[in-house]
Amino acid sequence: MFLKIDHIHDEGLDFKLLESKQHFDLDSTDCVLKEDVSIKGKLEKLGHEIICQGELQTELSVKCSRCLEDFSFPVNAKLKVYFVPQLEDNNLANEIELTEFDIDQEFYVDDKIDLTGPVRDSILLSLPPIKLCREDCAGLCFQCGMNLNKNDCGCEKENACDPRLAVLQQLKNKIK
Ligand SMILES: [Zn+2]
Ligand SMILES: [Zn+2]
Image (cartoon, rainbow, N blue to C red):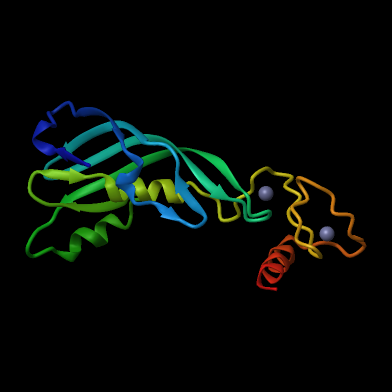
């Protein structure tokens, strides 16, 4: 997903892209891109450096951390990347200076910048560490492993159920 930098004029360049979901190679067992990724933003030149600011939208299919069911997760994420030219003698001074900014730094080669990596990162960072299909997801029964959002299995639940144990229990049942 390349953007030519010589198309960027003094007043900047607005862009709008729709990139296919296959492009991002974002496929793991607990997170899959369901929709193409729509990105819009603005590129601005600061000498040889280029600032890209924008936002992106797409939809992921994500596995619930509690009940292990897949659910749709809409992504609305910000994109802010600072592109610096890749030079033979890349001076460290550049990097040190940039750590003061809370934005990602990428290198570009020749006359084009690639948004693929930053967009992929931004999508992944939009996911919370604990992903829940809904806030009150009942999770799995820690005794029989049944998804309690769908059914009440009827097991005695006198002991407080730790959803993390339920996940283990379900794995154990699968192994049996
Ligand atoms: Zn769930
Ligand atoms: Zn049960």
